[in-house]
Image (cartoon, rainbow, N blue to C red; front, side, top):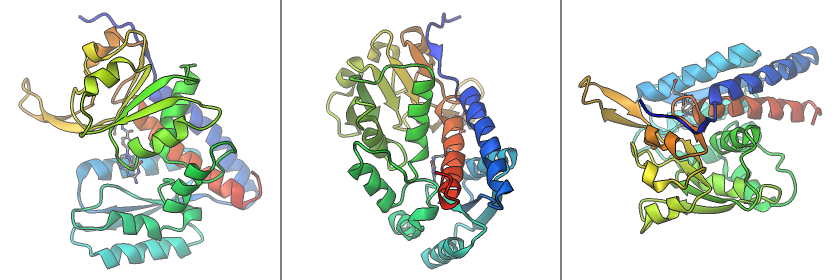
Length: 298
Ligand SMILES: Nc1nc2c(c(=O)[nH]1)N[C@@H](CN(C=O)c1ccc(C(=O)N[C@@H](CCC(=O)O)C(=O)O)cc1)CN2
């Protein structure tokens, strides 16, 4: 039995609080005749992606956001996906939408993301919205922000994890987490110093050992081990990969962080139960904020 010392950054509890707040805001919008609606575009039959999309629509039902679900087979062409994007851009019932990533091999995901109307970009991944995040270092960013990085910062803030002047090491340079999170964490008012590590990083262990905060989003099971973590550091496990469980002989999902890190870290966002539920909650937040802006409430 391991003795756990880290404070758990409980994403399920935090997401419940976010959704509770959103429920009241959606009701206020509905009173004004505005019904926020989230659209999702799911291409292919990846069971993980399908399950994430189902979760997003369950969340919508909980807070009163309408759901629009588009599903295309793995054989769909680029043109078919693009025509669904055009349809959602034009649909007044859809106030925000996402394209579930990853798209099947061979599809140009960047082109698809660029076709989403930036004012309906519930993921904050359109180049215009990412560009606004780059440009607005000191003022508030009033455009949608990428959901997972926003969830990470929200979770840290709720637990008073110090970020001002903190050394943050992010592992993974993907577009949904690694690349945008540095932009959010280095904004004036947050003031973290961010190192973005990736598969080309020469001495990852050395970077990890000096971090006050580690955000592990590499998709490599058990990558961050207790000997990599400075005592008292905050560790957020965002990575997901599939591994073979030697005890059951079955494959299962695994995070990037060895659970034994809880004995060294000051705070730990586990996976599952940490950042994942916040990704979903902040997606709803983006949808509600977009509708509030359109209704002149922000
Ligand atoms: N268009 C996007 N695609 C993807 C994103 C994204 O933000 N936008 N992120 C990930 C997947 N993702 C959301 O889409 C996501 C991943 C995990 C979870 C989650 O709640 N996980 C649970 C565990 C799984 C479960 O219980 O079902 C947890 O961590 O506790 C939510 C959303 C890639 N694609």
